[in-house]
Amino acid sequence: MKVLGKNAIFFINDAGVWKTHACARSIIFELITEFIETSISGQGYFATYMPTKDSFTASSEGIVALNEIGMLTLPDLQQRQIAHELLLCRFQRTDLGGNVYTSEASFYISHSSDSGSFDGMDTFSVQFRGTGSLTQVFTPIIPVPPEGILVQRYEWTGIGGESGFTLDGTTDVSPNEIRDLRNKTILEFNTDGRGDGRIITSGIPVGDDVKYIAATGAFSWNIPLEEDEEVYILYQDIP
Image (tube, rainbow, N blue to C red; front, side, top):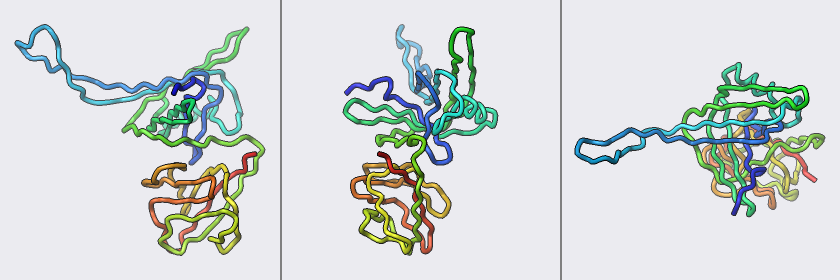
């Protein structure tokens, strides 16, 4: 099925939360393969080539906005550019049938600018230089929720060996309280002060991934907990 332009979104991981950058109107992601010529004498007039290495870049354009909740603005991006900060980013495309294809990679900001005219808006342009490898992901990102919705926290201490639990309002997996985490927006799943990887909603968790099934409130992960390992979940109710 087709992917509309508004459903192609560039996310930047900011302290464990995936955020968009404010008022971006267009995004370009470019994957480049370099080649070396392998033509030899006597081969004829047609050249031959072999691929050698891949690289990637991204760029965005839009209208400058300041102090946008849950987004990264031009000042935020330029702050990271000046600090030479390595950014974990995702370019996510979602088609009309809900299928998702995402390119995940690390980027540095290589160029940024903004331009304002007397009778128009101040517009920006940001260019990203990719580094390292590219990962293909087929699960959606849950973006930062709207302003004004309370962030809640659930804490739990592991007994050792656990790789999942269910919080459906009926099961007590914590000595603190029973909690219903069905159909929530999960912002972060943290073990021993370390924010784990992306929150996935299908497939099998690998590495630091945490799988969340909204309908049942079930969480599962790849690396079993150690004894007395502290866990907390940040989440929000979305009306």
